[in-house]
Length: 490
Picture 1: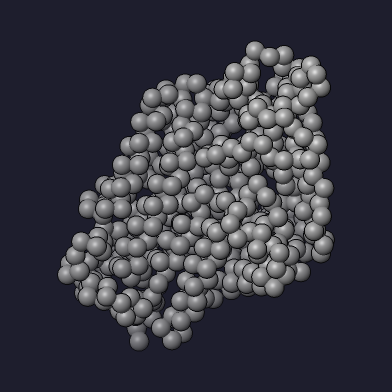
Picture 2 (picture 1 turned 30 degrees about the vertical axis):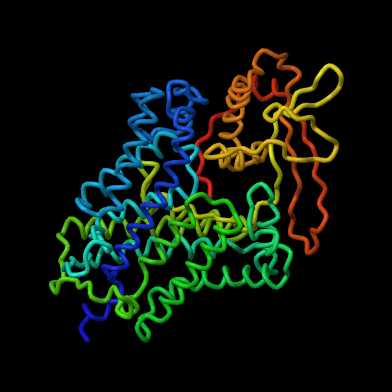
């Protein structure tokens, strides 16, 4: 067996690419629809955070078309065009045009609000970016007799390494006691604002949440072995596919993660070995016999990308993979000497996959705007309902605002991304008051109430009291918070 055939199992099958293309397109439509509902608030002339403040928050590496055009109608039309490109991307004809165009449009959207880009959006963008180098025009439902082009091996290797690092790095940084003792999934699913569906069922069963906790940790840590092991028709790779599908479907049915799970299933489809497709009706779709050879520039770029992805993932793993100490800080600093600084914020240079690590978030609850009436009653501003002694979430955000407020719950954290959410709340409170015609009331009677409960790593968390942390709106609105550029949220 020559070296070329020995590594042929790393080349993606054309049928896998076809379904990857369809599912990734659906995932991006989901995300773009979320952003469309908040287009003006993020990119328009009447955005929540003023354009000059947003530019400062995003930092110098976040230039986009929205730096020059901030218009309410333009922001919506721009996303509509991106949605049309998504449909063209899924369709598959003229795939290179639609793939590159969609990447450019989506990149501008993320760059234009890069301080408020979430981990699932970085993940989707990177998959979309690499798909530009794949023959994604396999319109599987149109014809089964066309001869399809094989993908370049170097592109398959680069994308595979990217995928492997995403899951393996998250496993490395899960060193917390909740993961090692089997309670992480249970603790994660007790965040009632972020969960739904099967969450209460899983969190209520020790067998389920412990099994899922160890199942997740085991597969993330063994993911490189499962993917790169050629043993017996890549049977371990098929195990990785089963893990990814079950992992992402489980999250989809219990936790709000926007389009992350759909993108994850798209990755699983991409990794399906060819021999499995040969046992399905798709077996009649044949690739061309010729093995494509990448030109020297594509090879140089892919090797450069592999280096960047790997070194940044290693630095991330060292920095977050254990409790901070002088030794880990020193090692991360030394590795920084061979690191390559990112010139653009949204790209494969971003390798920060800290998902529920080292432990799931301990602070849970929700935020509410409340008004103190002259008679002593407290009214929830958004719902208009009276606030009772028993804590109850009377208003729930939706769409993209939901994710902003879910992460904004950590606005008072001593470190991390709290700074940008302090800025967000500074402008969001007046925006919401105006939205419900409360901007004329005495602002001194308006309060931001942080309903919170703590999910620590204790073995018994059956009864956790919800506390009210009441902050005067004037304190948030009038305070000049430092504008910080942080790592993306995961």
